[in-house]
Image (cartoon, rainbow, N blue to C red; front, side, top):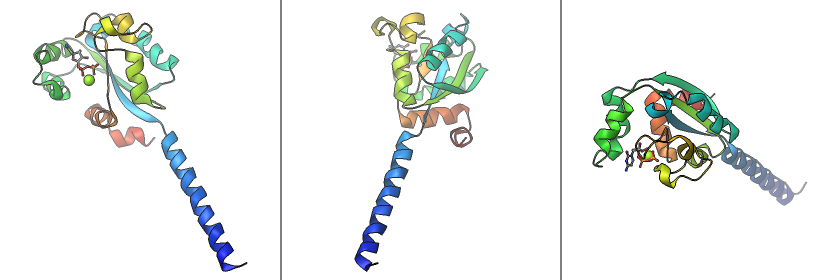
Length: 167
Ligand code: CDP
Ligand code: MG
């Protein structure tokens, strides 16, 4: 075989392998942190809320019930420290048990935000969790990571990130 032909075949093979690896990488599942908040756990809504995730193609891959300490709630919501609702939010988040969970699936981070609905239930569209269950802008039933960076930070806050995402 001529050298030039061999070289072309070699280049095409590298291209095919690259396309394969890139498409595999783009297709991989995402992971996001969800919290079922105290207003929802107190009304026993965990199973009903989980149905929203499952029916929309997300999997609940980790889930644990816990009660946040004040220090945990303050740190988890540190980005909102300067906001007027911060102190009330912390009080509310430690007022009862929560269920922290990892959801996975294709585009899980954005998909979960869609399933949750707007922060203020008055603006949440029908069919979303917050439209159905939220009691107010504060007592809005669920938390969901808002970006890949938040998801990594928030999952690591409650779980061993590498152990979960490398399964
Ligand atoms: O939870 P989400 O990402 O949709 O909203 P956020 O802007 O990150 O706010 C975090 C949480 O603070 C909300 O989910 C509410 O529980 C609470 N909050 C509030 O009590 N009053 C507001 N005006 C805005 C948010
Ligand atoms: Mg947020």
